[in-house]
Length: 623
Image (cartoon, rainbow, N blue to C red; front, side, top):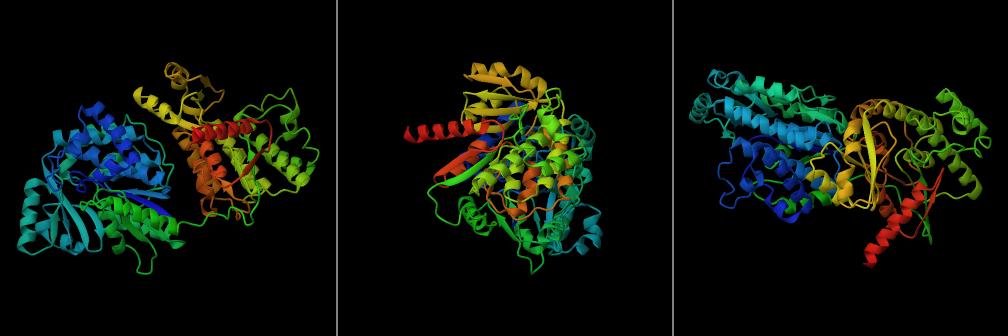
């Protein structure tokens, strides 16, 4: 089952939307409060104060763009955060109109802060430059619009939602004319809660100023596949003007759903989840899929305020229908064995010295693939390339793989689980026979080469501060260009971001009580949004490889949960931009029973991290 997150735009808002989630779910509330701080900083007003003001009734007109624009985005991003915390991870994102900002932010193409700034700026420019207008949903086929001059000469097509449902937009006077005509002719229609004519020439006066503003925004490539609600097609990159086009041009729900049904929906059922406040997108699913389709639309929020019940129903449905994880173990054992493979940072001169001659055929094949002697790289003191990313990663992969084969040969043990830290995850997949030695090496060689091209980034290890302390510090000091890259233990977290910012931010952490802020000797901001270009190219490279069924359960860095066969490609691609959740991965394994961990490869970095994670867990439990 594939999961699609859908995001709606203007017209779906109402006072008190999401209030029950705000009151009862800390994850939802914290994201709302975090984004509200952006609104206060940018436009000097709180969205939450207006949205949840008890003097406003549910169906009171909620029209002021300075509140409604950011409010819709905030609710949708908070809803996405809550679902992902519940283990519901999107395979595709699709937004319509204003909802495309939420999709772009969740995909990693823009930051949530920038998305807030972009929608607030749009609201200001439309309000200050455009005449009032409106949007009207029409419950008839498109023939009514195309063949009725009284309608099409006074309005523009705003959206095509289903074979017998569309929306029109325009300036207020013209829309009043259209509404009178439809009322007089008994044409079913509904006026939407929108005070400007989005998706029509009515907002053109704001175009030049907004497009100029967009040129200064930092926009990357999506890390999660995005289907455009404007074209109905996949979006591989976002030109700056795209974020004007999505509110000026018509949206096409029909084409977006057909694209998903004709690609992902051909092989398995799709779960369309409407994260918008009205739930209207989910209701449209049944009108846009084949009668034989197993796909399902699911809404959470609506003006009927049943979101707590709907959320529980969704979580239950997802658990019942998601792909089964590999069996943890088939026979009861006193102890479960987990083998761990280290990643970049564990390399050292001389590694593999006792392995290369034991496995000469694999050593020679590795050298053929790489185009240089792997043995010389690791053993020759005069060769200084070992610490360069493009050389480090293939070298570690080879030594880890040979170490695994030697350990398996010497002990005859087949581990119950395998896991790897970042690069080491490729060795875990090799051990699980999801990929062979050569495939793993080719992937790692490409991965290392791509990561080596990502310049001007930096990373720093922080010790002595917890996750929430670090995130709070980043918020308070507006260090929103810094991402968390590794959750190595409860006491060690690695940050990633622009090199100059990483280098000068240490004093904030030291002042907050960190016992160590250490800038790492790396060339890029690994496991962060800054790896998006590498992720995009690597994702294309991955498409040419076949992966076999997993014979040993493998724990994913990205999800801290077990791999499933259908997610191997996406998880390996997303690993470049997502944090390494090592702490959660070890805790997940610890919860499976009495587990013995063994590090397979050079050094003992992971052994020390596991010891610290288990020690802190015991102290927390006993405390």
